[in-house]
Length: 420
Ligand SMILES: [Zn+2]
Image 1 (tube, helix red, strand yellow):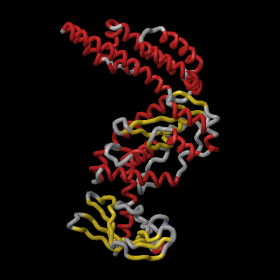
Image 2 (image 1 turned 90 degrees about the vertical axis):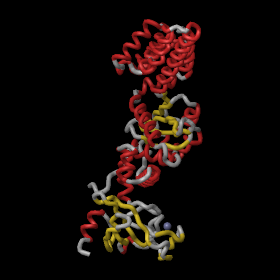
Image 3 (image 1 turned 180 degrees about the horizontal axis):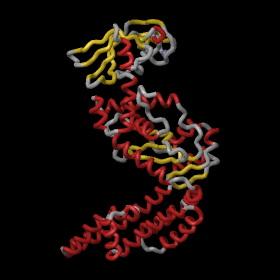
Image 4 (image 1 turned 135 degrees about the vertical axis):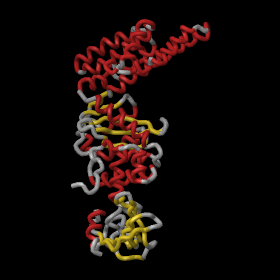
C-alpha cells in the first residue's frame, strides 16, 4: 500500500506495520488494520518481557484512536495470547495501547490533558466518551507517570491537609510541597494509618530531611508527624486558623439573625423582619477580606457597624486575627498577644472559645509566624482540589479523583502526543 507511510505519520504509530485502511460504512469510521513490528511482537502485555505464543485469544480487536478530521478512527489487529513466565497466558503487548484497554495511547494522553484543561462537557463532547471513561483514562495515565517519576524527591517543607469529597462523608489526605507548590501525595482516608502510609513511602532517611510540616490542628496529624518526622517544626496553617475565626463570626451572625427573627414572631413588625433579612444577606460581606469587598458589601458592613455593635466587634476580632498572619514574625506574635487579651474579654462566647483554642495551639501558630511559609499557596492548592472533587463527581471511586488531582496539581502534568 503506497499511502502506508502517510497513514503511519497521520496516526503517529511507532513499531507498527499498517496492513490496510478502509472506511467502515456501518461504523461510519476509518478502520486501520495493523500489527506490531517484529521486535514488538510476542511480549507479555503486563510486563513487556518476551514470551512464547500461546493461542489466538479472542481473535481480532479494535482500539479507538484520535479522530482524523471529524471522522472516528479505529485500529484493528489480532490479539493473541502469549505465555509469560511470570504472568502465565496473557494477551500480548501492543505498541499503540496500554494493556487491556480499548483506546490508543495517543487517545488516552489527549483525554488526560483535556481533563486538566477544560470542562467536563468539553471533554466528553469533543472526545465522544462518557465521563466515567475519562475517569478510567486519567487513572491509567497518572499511574504510568507515577511509575516513571519520584514525586517525593527532595521534599523539605510540606503541608498536610484533609479534603472532603462526596458530600462531606469521605475524605482524602493530601500532602503538598511548600517549595514547589505541587501536590505530591493523596490517598483516601483521614487517620493515622493513612498518613503513616505516606511516611512509609517517603522512607526514614527522607523523612529526616523534612524541616517544616504545616497542618491544621488535627490530633492524628500531630501524632504521626511527631513519630515519623523528628526534625520537623510543626506549624499551624494560617488559613485554617483564620477559617476558625470565620466560623466563630458566622455563629455570631446566626445568633443575631435568630434574635431579629424572634422579634418578628413576637411583634410581626416590618422593621425587624427587614433587619433579619439584611443580616442573612450580610454573610459574604462579613466573610470576605476587606480589600476584596464590593461597594455594595462595604455598605453592608457600614450598616452593621451602626446597627449591630456586637456583630461588628465580632467582625473586627476576625479581621484582627487575619492581620496577625499578614504581619508575621515578631510583629505578628505581639499582635497575637494583644488579640488574645482582647478576645478573652470580649464577652462574645464563640470568640472567647476561639481564644482558648488559639492559646492551646500557640506553639504551632508561632512556628507558622516564624517560618514564612506561604499561606496563599497552600490555600490555593486546597481550593483547586475542592473544585476537582466537584468535577470528579461521577467518577468511579476515589482513585480517578486522586489521579485527576495529581495530573492537574502535581509537578508532572500530562503531555499532548506528537509534540516535540
Ligand atoms: Zn508478564
